[in-house]
Structure formats: C-alpha cells, structure tokens
Length: 355
Ligand code: FES
Ligand SMILES: [Fe+2]
Image 1: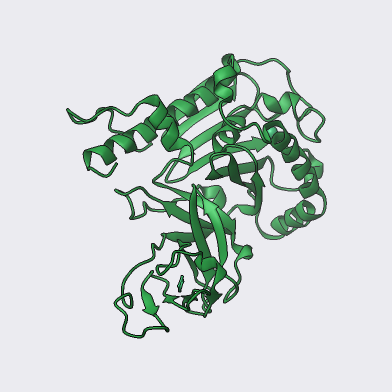
Image 2: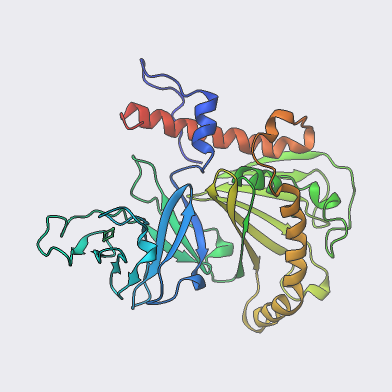
C-alpha cells in the first residue's frame, strides 16, 4: 500500500474526521478508475460527457481509434465540450466553434483567428489507458497530476485469464458498495436463493490476513463452498477480488472470479465495474464465453440486482446508525484504510499550500 504521511508539519491544522470524510465523499484521489466500457465510445464518433469523482469529463476517440479524456468544459464560455463535434483529431465546441486538440491545446478560434487563446493549453487532459474492455482514467490531486503506473491484477491483464466487463450505474455511495464487497457473509443470506450461493454454514468466524498490497478477509475453516473471502488490493486502483465456486455445469475454468472496482460518480451515485474472470484458454475459453453469454450472465445480473436493491437510494450517513459485529471487521478495516489515505493526501496538499 502507498506511503502515508501521518503528521502534518507544525503549524498546519490536522484534517478533521469531517474533512477527511468530505474529501472521500467523491472518491479517493491518486488512483486509476474505470470510467466506461470501451465499446461505448466509437472511433470518430460523438463525444461522450460523464461525471466521475464529481468531475465533468468528456471522452472521445479520434479517427485512429485512440481514446482521449478531457475536462468537459470549453475554454471559451465553459459550456460542455461533449455537446460539440468530434472532428477526427480534435473537438469542436458547438457554441462558437473553438477547436481543442487531444492535449488540451486550443487549435483554432474560428470567429477571431490569431486570438491569444490559440496555442494555449487550456483544457485539462487526463492520463488514460484501456484494459479489460474498459477505459481507465487517472484522477490525481494537485500534487499528482502525473499518473502512477497502471498495473492491473493478472485477472484483468489478459494472458491466461478471460474477462467480461460488466458495468452498471447504481444510486449508492461508492463506499457502501466497497463495504458490500468486503462483506462475504451477505452471500449466505441475501443471495441464498442464487444458483451458486446456497451452500455452506450460515454461521462463521472471520479472520483477516495481510497481503503485500492489501488484505484478505475470509471465513475461518470454509473455502470453495460459497462466497467465502474477499481481498482488497490497492495497487494504483482500488480492487476487490473474490471467487464464487462453480458447479461443473458452469463450464471449464474452476472457480469463477470477480474483480470489482467502484468508480464514484458523485456522493451518492457510482459507476460499478464487476469484471467477471476465469482462468481459461483456447477452446475452453470459447466454451466459457458462449456459456456466459447464453446462460450465466442473466443469473449474475439477477444476483447483482439483489445487492443493488439493498443499497439503492440509501443516501449517506448509514454509519451513524450502525451496530457492527465481528463479520464487519473487513469493512471496518477498509474504511480505516481509506480514511488514512485521504488524510495523508490532505496533509500533503496543505504542506504544499495546495489545499
Ligand atoms: S463556448 Fe465554446 S466556443 Fe464559445
Ligand atoms: Fe452480493
């Protein structure tokens, strides 16, 4: 996990819990986030306007197919660039025709050629990569506009693993969705009627195990029976890995994996990416992909709906009313970790005079 500054310099106020939670409300900075499945942005097609981590961004693909992500604001009168046109190698604002290149430079002000705005880098461009059929964007703070290396876990890096990018917008805070992912016990109850999670004890004791970049939260003494463990992994992005055991009828590849990354839209809405992964190659991968599309996918969406409905529209502030017990140790640890990271970022910004 990344280094955190624990103490601010003398004379600088320590961020309060409220400030830390306020900073976290729209997402932890200095991480990569998937923002949209790649297929939603067409080569040379219309620009797509989105909100992610509370910021308005525009996504567009040039005629070569390269993806570009920029602040969705025209440098002239600040209207959304996403309402403009993709000219193949630049965006053209619909309002007065100002043209902006992929690096954010104003290329042309057609109404007043030679205007000082021309040649200025006036639009922020975000570091972007495409991986596992999704567009990933670096959301850095004022001290980290340069992206950290993008190191996806092996399940998303191609190679031996096949994956499907499952995406849905939920009306829930990103933090409650991570809490849900770090709470394996709900599988036994909320998903008890599902095709894969009806087995195993309805009582359990959990233990936590450190990993190099996170931790595993798992049932003591039960493995490969139900949704028995979750792993939080902070490696340039906030991943949660888990596995659901699959019967033989689920096709080749053994346990079925899910790698989740939840991208905040704003305080109470989230873009959820549940990458469904399986270690299968060759013809077996083809079988799995066929099975997934024709049989398994609708069932998975059904299970996810159960999660979504549990959190839908809950708003904020559930923590004030919670009475947690041992099964919640995983999410408690995750909350502490996120708060520690956000606090460290606030302290660093204050020391640098940027907050
Ligand atoms: S607002 Fe975009 S060109 Fe004027
Ligand atoms: Fe669930």
